[in-house]
Length: 94
Image (cartoon, rainbow, N blue to C red; front, side, top):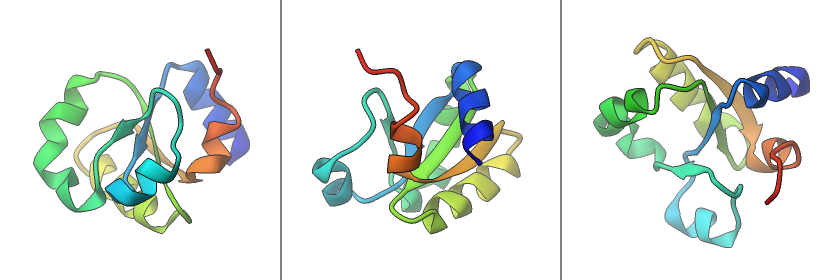
């Protein structure tokens, strides 16, 4: 999974955090987009408009897996990055 995460980041992937607002406020990846899992279906056009590959993350990988499967079915280039900390360590810091 780490290689796939690095590959996606190298392609300019956007990190999509699908955790709750409370979880997001406790810490998140710099530059990540935050859309709570339950509203993903309402935000498909917004997500498609980014025009980039996506790495979905959450706390453990369950919710991001659901988001990744749903969005892949909508034709979006996405992978499940699992827990956000797994991806965060590979994102360049400003």
